[in-house]
Length: 65
Image (tube, rainbow, N blue to C red; front, side):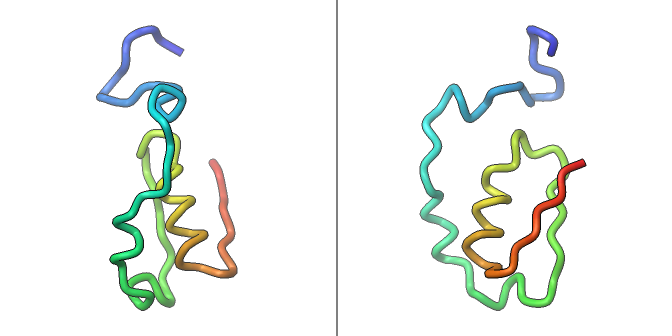
């Protein structure tokens, strides 16, 4: 990995700040994601997306590319 962040993203983002559950997720209605697929493109390491998946979808499947 380059030493300087490219385009505002950098490796190990969540290692440099404590990761806690995002309280804003509790404000999302359950039907917001119902019957939908979610694509997270280049959002650091994807922890918020994983948390949304675990919070909203009981049958969440994660695919990493």
